[in-house]
Length: 569
Image (cartoon, rainbow, N blue to C red; front, side, top):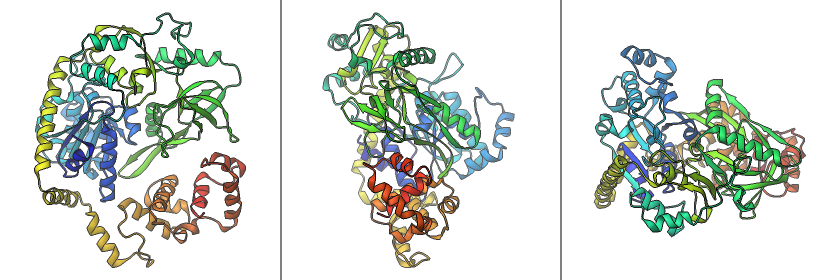
């Protein structure tokens, strides 16, 4: 199934299990669906099985969202107690569409506990209290994290059957473009590894002797630019610290900033791939931990620190020779369209070593991995599938278990593929008018507005200032534009929308990109007496980076103000 076909099904409001091989675009498809929901005036509840996965989708863990926390089981009294918490009840009552990322890492027990809370709060005896449910993940990847010995995957629960999920199995590949490597990965996934696949991987073997820091002693400089994947944090911290200490020069320290409730901020910090205190030196091997909005780097891009810019921010040269001046980026936790907490840090981490767990979701240029001690089904597959091409794989060891997947999941995967094919055939044969009718019905049932109707109403009535530029806009952008026009300051506009100022400015930038923003819409947010000097600083700066402008102005004006002035150009 293609991403477009899956998106068509998602828009009908069906309960869906979205799956596919690593790099098939599951997260991209969900992001497209979330954007469509918001454009229709429907705010989804976005959650994930782990904190790391939650930061990738600006959501919270299902454990936090449902109020179950670290509980391994719930009594009837526990359900009543949690459902009685005002903030939990309000969140679940407001919810309409619940998305759970990395479902493979959620145990059947946790899945059922969240369901019990939703039923109790919503007083509806249907799975998850009647919420539309979207499950995303791949059961060949990392298994559930639990203190219990016998952990069952979520699909083993009767609840999975009761949800009547439509399976959408994405079959296109966007991470790997290496036919030989794809053949190896497909063979592992199909449980059909042959001698030629072993030979392809053995050709990527490097010296097994280790240096004091734990890295292969015979690796070249090119290999040293790649992270070594470990199963435990202690190994990662030891190697990264040792390799950084070897480099001459001054340590550059960058500390994370945060906004929001302390408990929510702490969750973001734990899930963020960039450390709370980032220490670098010139010559340090680093990895980007976030996707660039401009497409200059992705989560997993490797490089080396080659210096700092005028603002003291790290300059990274990637393996492709691209020199990137970095600046802090935000990780946010959103609930019902409002930012509840955020952290900001330079989107880098040392890349000498990292855990397999933290690599999930990354597209890596290269990685060093020792698969000689693999003991769990799927471990080797998860590690190998992070890397784009076979030429980026460096093996210090390999055993047979590393190339094996769980027989039960192998069998279940065939069922998922068959169900997906049946769903695809049914929707391909369905008349377009019928599919659109289902989508309209879903949007109205969720309290949203079908975009054609919304545009028509706005064209008839206009906005309160007599300006029709909001006609046909996505709901979130139209709301922001209206709030900005009525606000006396950026802070007031953010407060009116229930979002942070940087998000307001981001929405204005989106509006400018599609030609729906005029200077008169927002100019009143910027004091007239500062426009000239900010314009001058912007003109003198090279490139699109704002850090040099900020520092040239000696910090007198915020990044958000500088971005607003930039929109006036």
